[in-house]
Length: 338
Image (cartoon, rainbow, N blue to C red; front, side, top):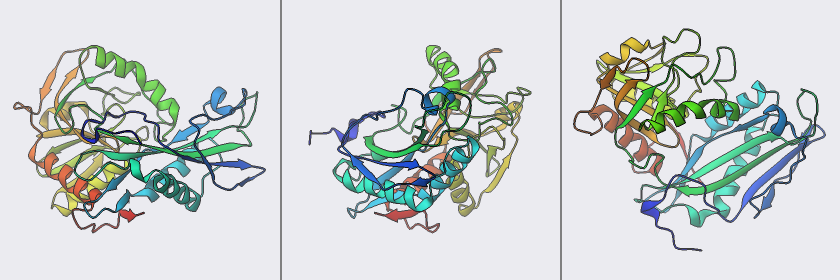
């Protein structure tokens, strides 16, 4: 295996040795298959290509100081993929098949799990798509479920450092009653223009407002938004926001720390009252926000004058990472050693 600079890994695709695949045909799931190919033969009329029948998950495995590899909250990922499949009429992956596939993919690529203390992890990408041929808008009868993995560093090159975010009312990520609450590719395609717009202006990410009224906070690019004030962890509630597993974990940790937790609609005007703000998700865990700038009005709300994360965000981040790495007791039964 090539020498890997574990401490300077980017967040991006990297080839590993094996991936795991399973087909749904004739109304049932087949056996797991192991492949060393990075490519998938796909029919030119596959529904994934024409009608967007595709869903995915993002997960991580962590090497502990004890040399054991840990998965984090995999059942939540299995449930979310089930919900995504149900939402766009795909065959649902049973929990036991999901588990077998991710464990097999991690175990067969174990030497790619970054060493403890490097700040890197093994990213796991379960993927489900319509591989059956249909011309005419209807669900496929054949699906491919696969899992591949890769070692990754921080999602933002800054790591756990505050970043600047641009509020982008000129773009919508998802419609009310649409697929915003599902982890399907179309939502990410719909976010690309806003993200590029933000990047071109020098911002790390975009903050979406709700598509209906442009009044409430929606997604923070590919992550959930949260704010902290008065010892309360506040995160938006919306039918067009993807339920983040990391967000739910932070809520549980916040409660254990003695904080209140509120999941409710968050008006844009409330942002200025937060003491700290951040975005959270599997890839970055927590991305603290330094300042938020409104793309139209230019209004600027600053959270970090010294360029450092806030104390509560730091405590939440450290506790979650410590549980994932096995450095702290896991009182929530989130972690599974594989």
